[in-house]
Image (cartoon, rainbow, N blue to C red; front, side, top):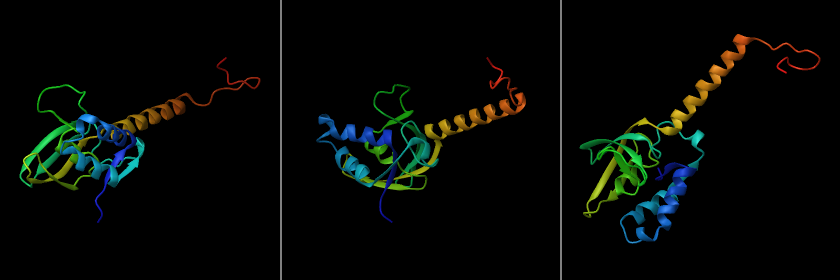
Length: 161
């Protein structure tokens, strides 16, 4: 099967901005950035599958089948306690962005050693949370309408005026 990643329009735009950044030109990020951009399937946030890692997702991953870690994929502007975030401006963060659970990405790390990164679990995905919140709001609104019943119509108006 052909290598691919699934990115939201926002994540894809972020990768393009990193690619255009003159300070990134001579780093090991460039080949990984190009791979991500050329193999990307881009979709709207609301269409992103729930098992795909997007920006601000909390994920568990393995390095070379051994070391396991859980982090939040972030951009460089976020600040929090050390060890919680994995910026997408790092090789591992970039590798995980757009992967689905069970998908692997192979890269050459800063020491010149090949690493195999496996995305095990997406614990939290902002797009999934957004959909669930919208669905709960729509359900609450529908229940509210059912509880109130139909509005009386008087002289062609709905009675609210």
